Length: 64
Image (tube, rainbow, N blue to C red; front, side):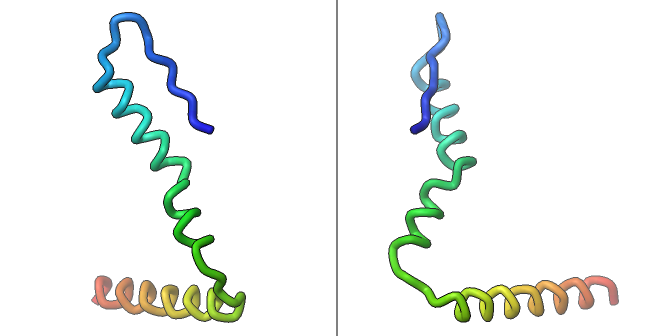
């Protein structure tokens, strides 16, 4: 649970901005999206490998 304490004289807009930043940093939405449906561990691993290959290719292109 995220708790944001509003300081004396602080506007609600600023407190809301801090809440949104804290919410995003906690990764709550990304966690909800991943838990929405089950993915087999083999599929997750395959996606990691594909992403790593892509990053390596982009890195090699940038060096050339």
